[in-house]
Each structure stands twice: as C-alpha cells, then as structure tokens.
Length: 224
Image (tube, rainbow, N blue to C red; front, side):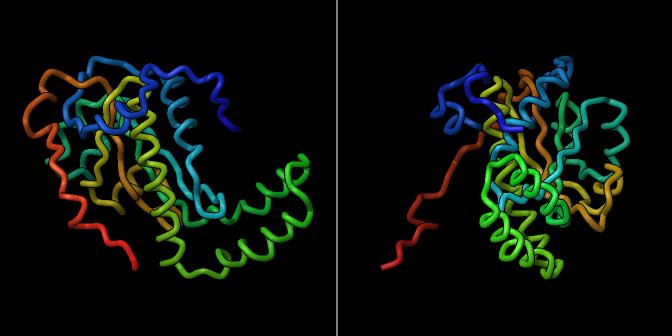
C-alpha cells in the first residue's frame, strides 16, 4: 500500500536538519516506549524507497522487547551491547534473495487493477524477471544488499523525522543472527541493524557525535 504524503505528520519537517544533523547515537533512554503502530508507520514510510526492478528485496525483523534482546545477545559483538541493550527498538534489515519469486503475482495484480498495460506487463516478465530467475547466488545477494542498504538509509531519516535518533550497525555474527531471528538462511542474508529511540544523557559524549568527514576531493573524481 502506498503511503499518502498528505496524511503523514512528521515531528521534524526540516529536511536539512533531518539529513545534515543525523548522528549515530549509541545510548538511549531504555524507559521510553515506542508503540508498534508508530514503528510500523516508520517502516512503511521507509519502504517507499526505490529498489532494482521494484523487487523490494528486503525484510524487516523487529526486536522491541527485553526478552527478545536477551535471546539475540549471543550473536552480537560486545562493543554493540551499549546501544542494543538500551534502545527500545532494533530493526534488523535482511536481504531477500528470493524476492523475484513473487514478482509475477505482484505485477499481475498491478495489471489487473489497470495500473499498467499488457505490453508493460509482458516487458516485465520477458526482460526483467528472467534476469533474476537465471541469476547466480552472488548476483542475488548483491542486489538484495544494495536494495536493503538504500532502505536502511531511508529508515534512518524517517526515524529522525519522527523525532527519534538512531544508529546503524552490523557488529554481529550474520549467519547466526539470521538463525536467531527465525529466518530461512537460504533465502535471507543479514545486511544491518538499526537501533533507535530517545537518546539518554549518556549519549552526548565526545565519541557519540564524531562527525569528522574527509575532504570531498579525496574521494571524488569527475570523468573528462
């Protein structure tokens, strides 16, 4: 379902602030609660991000209880305990290497609604879909990783627009994490996690807002 921008009411509508003042916050107020309705709204808004051939080759797995956090700790590297333990919500973003298997169903429904022509439907099925059906595992993993990384950035900005702060991280054992999340390791690959909530007073230390950036000339080249 598409998100109607006319009905979304962000706490922070200042894009320059949302984007340029985003920081990786690593300590949260664990007493704060974010409702599942608001979490779902943020996930839905972020999922409007583009993806290759509109495959949307990603999956969210949400951890928002202390009991579940404890069960996932075995897969997490200790230097990430601080934000994982304190954040009321952590969203694990997984890449879906089998997203193309529902492609026919998705686009047939779009066609039957009258949103695309039969010619467009045939183009999708005859050009885009075989690319994925005949692809090797490396291609599917790369595609799902790129899509999921774009989703993650959208989610980081959406979280800030809702008035919270976040940190993106991947300091955990990826295969074990997929298993602990109860997901099919043949289908899903771990991409990253995003923990978020209201920052605690302890978040405002020197190491939490290190925004030093390289000069743009050190990593930019224009082709002549």
